[in-house]
Image (cartoon, rainbow, N blue to C red; front, side):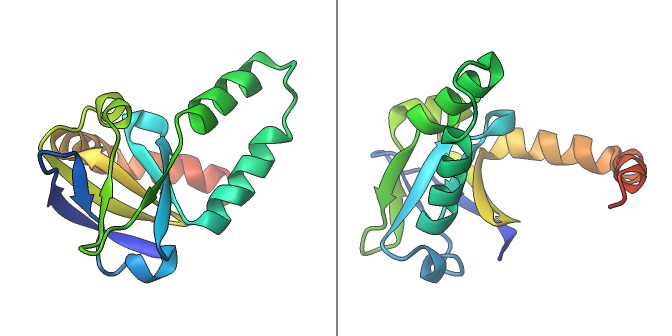
Length: 143
């Protein structure tokens, strides 16, 4: 289970330090892809394989299924953790998420998200301001 948020800088080569707390669950590499809300999703190998199987099982005749598969699968990369616990975020993923110098690595239970620090601050403020409304809607769904 991944929880918490951690602020990190992106170095000149596009690397970010992965939180020490998360590293044991990932082993020697992570799977990074374009996430929703213009952040990056990071998965363990097992979680990535489960998600990829579910996505590939959707109908390729459905336009939304094709679009989602393209978003998640074609943009993915396996990123090894170096000796300092850093991963390289390719240019195209940093551009997608708008990440330049500072980022937030957030644990979201079964995945990790990487956000541009400013975008994360804005998203978090909006979500916290609407917290009661969000909770009420989820309550209607039985959560």
